[in-house]
Image 1 (cartoon, rainbow, N blue to C red):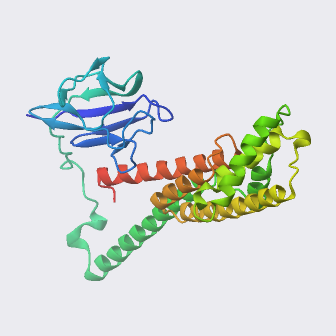
Image 2: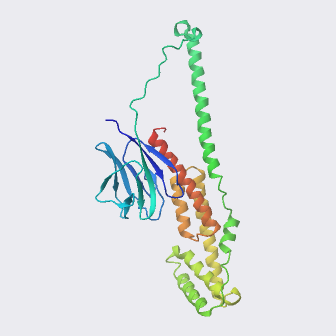
Image 3: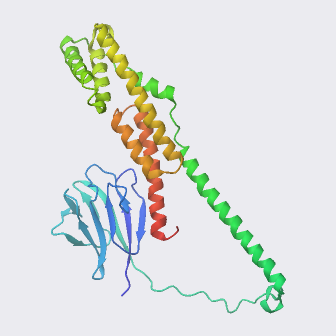
Amino acid sequence: MHQSTIQIEIQSTPDTGRHYVFDHGPITFGRAVTNMLTIDHVHTSRQHGEIQFADGHWQLIITGRNTTTVNGRKLRGRAHRLKDQDLVAVGSQPLFQVNLLATTGAATKPKFDGEPVPEAVSHQHLTRRGRLWIGIGLYLIFMIGLIVFLFTLKSGDDNLVHTVPRLTGNEITRSIRQPLPSKKTYAAQMQHWLDQARTLYDRLGAMPDMLFDTYHAFQMAVAYAPSNRLVEGADLLNFEHTRKQLIKTITVQYDNAYRKLKSHQYEEAYAAFEQVMQSYPATSSLIYRNMRQHQNIASEKMEQSAYKRRRGLF
C-alpha cells in the first residue's frame, strides 16, 4: 500500500496561503520555531500537536491544551483521522487546511538506450591523458558551479536581511525620547503615575527588568502634568537618568541582535530580538515594528533551513 502525500495550506496570518508538502510523518506544529510547521498565533500552543501516518491514513493528534476543532467540530479523543479538505482551527481561528494528494506509484526510470554516444568522447577512443584532462575539466566545472551556488545563497541571505533597514543609535534615541501625547491636566492621575515611577525607580537596582515600566510611568506623569513638566527637581533628574539607561540598554541589545542576523545566526537572532522586544514592549513605536520585521526574517530563514533539511538538500 502506497502512502499518500499530505499538503498543509496555512490559514493563519501572516503566512496565509503558504503550502507545505510532506510524504511522511510525524509533522509537528505549534508556536515554537522547533516545530516542522511554525504557526505563530496567540491561541496556538508552543507544541500544539502533530500529524502522523498510521494504519493507512493520516491522523491528527493534539498535545496542546487549547480547544482544537476540525471542520467546526471539537476533537473527541486524542487521535482524529484526517480527510481531504479538513479545516483545523483553534476556537474560531483557522490554522490550516489538509489536502490529501494521491501518489502514482514508483516513477518510471528514464530510458537512454536510443541516444548515440559521440565518437569523440567514446571511452575506447580516449587516451589516458585525454581522460585525465576531461576529469580535471569536470572537476573545475563542478567547483565553479558550487562556488556560484554558495555565493548565490549568501547573497540571497544578505539581500533579505537588507530589505529591512537597521536602526541607527540616533533613530533609537529619537524614538525613545518621543513624548506621549499630552493629556488634559489631571492632578490625581499625574500623582498616581508619579508615585508609581518613584517606587519603581527606587527598586531598579534589584529589578533592572523594570526599566521600561519606570520610564513609562514617568512619561505618563509628564503627560498629565501642567505644561507637561515635572515640578520636583529630583523627579526630573531620575526621569532623565531612567531615559538614558533605557536608550543605552535598547541600543546595545538591538545591535547585538542585528549582528547575529547579519552573520546568519538566525535562531540566536530570533531569540535576541525577542529579548529586546520584551525590554521595550512599545508595540506602536518605530523600534518595536523594526524589531518585529527583523524577527520575521530570522523566522523565515529558519523555516527555509528546516525545509531544506526535510528535503535532504543539506
